[in-house]
Image (tube, rainbow, N blue to C red; front, side, top):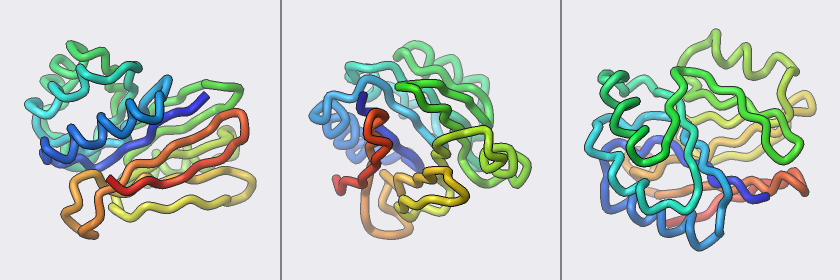
Length: 163
């Protein structure tokens, strides 16, 4: 199974639309969003996804109840600041990365994969046997590069894709 990974979309509708298109091209079965949607109006493009989305809030998500409501309308389940996902035989921790307590929980050894955002730089690495993935930023604000990532659950392999 291929899971799409995104983070730090920060209201950039044209790039969110491009990310959704790229996720569809890869035929992902699930999308994990590591936070920082920012505004509720950003939900609409996700209605075009052919897969459900699970997300967490980031440090720039002030209107959490409104975000939950509008994202639910496009089949997205926003689960607070931390989410546990079991998919393809993997236990995945999803968090934005700005809260130490949530990162400590994610890196506790209870998960096979940790997906995080916040720093806006794409990276894939292994730490104490845990595959740690940051898909980078969709918005392109800090790095000038707009990226998403993908996780193949069967191969336990991830890669980053420029938009």
